[in-house]
Image 1: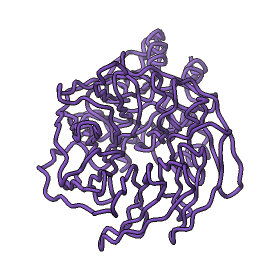
Image 2: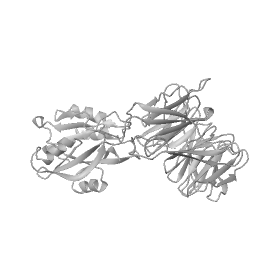
Image 3: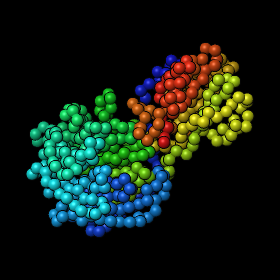
Image 4: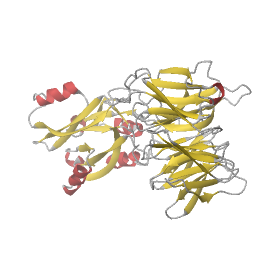
Length: 485
């Protein structure tokens, strides 16, 4: 039975879905912001929109994820030189916002404090679009028409670093570690380029056209491919369908472990489509008011999970606030029994108090270790945890067992040595190739004592503790859950 459990745990990816009510607000742009393009969020939580002749800011208090936001408390703008139309934005570490001017073949820099603006030309006809600030301190720009990526130094010096095949166009630009990720709009390929080693690698994907590239909460590269939304895994590209009738044009990662997409219906009269997709590929559109009628760019503020999108054709922007807080709301506490040599975890505060008071028998005390989870679901990209207790009358152990993997839960239920206590002791994230960036890995160690009916597992987020169990003769089974921060 133990070998079966270990096999079931290997290589499983999360595919849980969450549909929940949201609050959608559609607002007119301000300060005369016309054709708002690729919205971005600064480190201070300000929402910035590039427009014709200006960049405008809508500032909210940053808050904990799930907290109710107050009304806007400040708005501001940076005036740009005549004829400049900002397209996309990126913030550096020196209090500057950088932007592309698609039609003007320029890259600009505006100081957020002084509002002084500097403009730097790129090659004629390049049509600079996507822009990112990279870990090497430089700005990188994807030029749609030229099919090239430019490096822009802090002083504004522009140089070409890489290009795709002649006649092809680049859409989307993101950084992952020290590499640049971008898409070949025409050929449905994702490129990974290392400026340090000057190495270019390409990955074929399934798409209509590649419109955007981002890094997902699972630390994988995701792309908006029109009729497909996809990701790059160690086993190759995987493509999913957005909600029916949606053409996905842009993507943004959310702190709850999902991604948000924006686009349109692709019909004669375009209708904005905004939705949420889990890392397992389950997509759901959000119902938008009828006055949202053009294609959108999208961003998610990481401090509170609020979604912002722009509608260039109608000079409007939208804001979506998830109705239910998805911050972790329960602590999974660990106990140790000095008599049995067993570890036990519980997400029930009343059960923990009972153990403290001796209701579970002598020898139990808290170890001081714990990890966060959710009390109940459904939650985005989270799954319920099954809890079992050994059926000693049938030869089972005097111990508990926990699993977030549905197949493993089903397999253990067929073993007469275990009794299912609940299918939802708490909710937590399943590990894929790695735990998502908003989580910590939960390691499981096994004492290999099943044959003498002394089977016990220990669950910990502390890697040093996990290693120490191995030196004590426990089997280090690896990462079996991912706990939210």
